[in-house]
Image 1 (cartoon, rainbow, N blue to C red):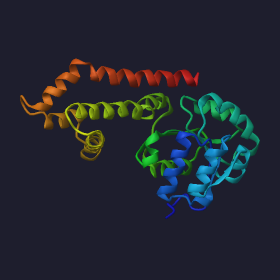
Image 2 (image 1 turned 90 degrees about the vertical axis):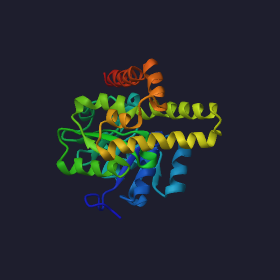
Image 3 (image 1 turned 90 degrees about the horizontal axis):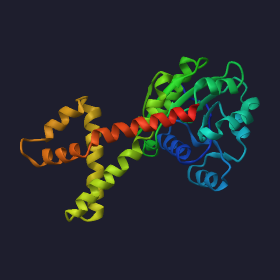
Image 4 (image 1 turned 60 degrees about the vertical axis):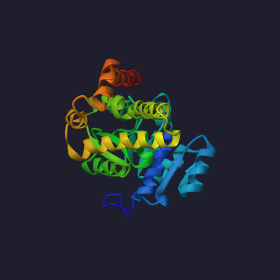
Length: 274
């Protein structure tokens, strides 16, 4: 089924690394754009072959081919090489293509200035959970992007999770929180599972229980709209097991550790954008 607003439009990806391929796979799984209307380019032919063989998308080692064929182009490349990519595709892009950048830290103005006058640009910060259609994506439209452009990008990234619009000055915070956030949670799941193994559970069972616990807790926050502190209080009975565990976490500075991780990642995003 094709969602209204994307009917007939073609989507291109420049870069098929971890994030690019995750988005492509998630979008194909969601079915909002047929694979025959998805194009991808990369310097690594093995990555392209895998995507072509598994998803039947169109692939090329030439970025310009993707730009010429697609109506919307996702720049899924590292911030350090984004400028050279923009320089290479500028002529082919003209100003009638919608350019979507997921390069951490690179500002809309920088991208717009490297493309043609009037180019429509939207900046997005998704995360790796697009692979399982649970990404958190923040979207900032550029000065020439239309309401329809913003809606199209919300639809694309909403198909692989949740998407929302934020002002660009908050994108570094988004990068530090949801962009980098999965890497902060994976060690938590692993450590919780290690605790279960220490107490006698087999590794497989411990991992399932830990991961499901994290997913269930997150779902409670999202679906109930209840503050996490209130949900925590619902589980911590007086003198019980949970409050003992919470006390140990507080002793070891869990809140400061997670806050500092988000702040450090946000600061690095700013550095990459300078």
